[in-house]
Each structure stands twice: as C-alpha cells, then as structure tokens.
Length: 125
Image 1 (tube, rainbow, N blue to C red):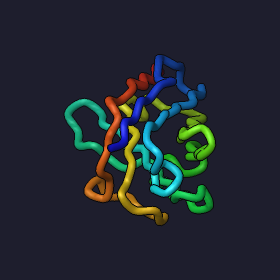
Image 2 (image 1 turned 90 degrees about the vertical axis):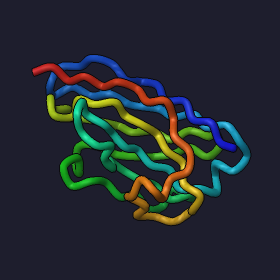
Image 3 (image 1 turned 90 degrees about the horizontal axis):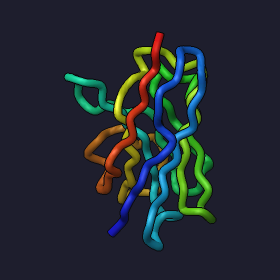
Image 4 (image 1 turned 60 degrees about the horizontal axis):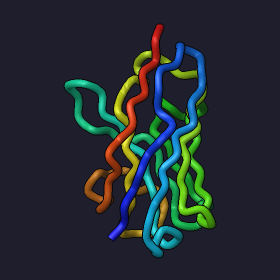
C-alpha cells in the first residue's frame, strides 16, 4: 500500500512558478515510476509528466514541455513537479500517482495504481 500526499499548490499570476511536492509512504517508492496528472473543471484527468524509478528517464506532455520538469528524491520518498512560465490554461487540480511498474514513458492513467488527493493550482491572467 502506498499513500501519496501532494502539497505546493496555490494561486499564482501568469508567468509565475510553483513547485509541487508529493510525499509517499511505503518502502517501495524507489522501485516504482511516478507521475503527475491534472484535471481542469469539466475535463478528464490528463497526463502531465512521468519519471522512472531511478529518476533517469522523464517524459512530459507536449503542452508543458520546456516549462514543467519532474524530478524525484528517493532518499526522501518525494517526487516534485517544477512549473515555470505558468499560463491560465494550466489551472487544474494536480494529482500525484504511483505506478506498479518502474520504467519510463508511463503516460496512461491505467498504468498507475495509487493516487493522491490532489492540490489546486490556479493561474490568474
């Protein structure tokens, strides 16, 4: 069983930055891939970024490439999402997720078994 707790969301002006954190419980964190997804009002939950268990492979969705970066610290059981140059269309609830696999390029929701409760990110224009 893995429990995930996100933090770091909030209100920011367009062009600003936020760093989301996701703290994981359990001894398997360093052996599983992690991902970030987001869900805007009235829309489906969408993939944002993923990182493999070792932190050596990352993959980000096209619309955030060059602005968002995922990273992890296995010693701290934490995964991060650094978000720069934020836009109003980035407004959403952001969810952290843990996969049962360890590899890279895990971008489908059904590849993740555990989810956090989400943290709200609001970008004002």
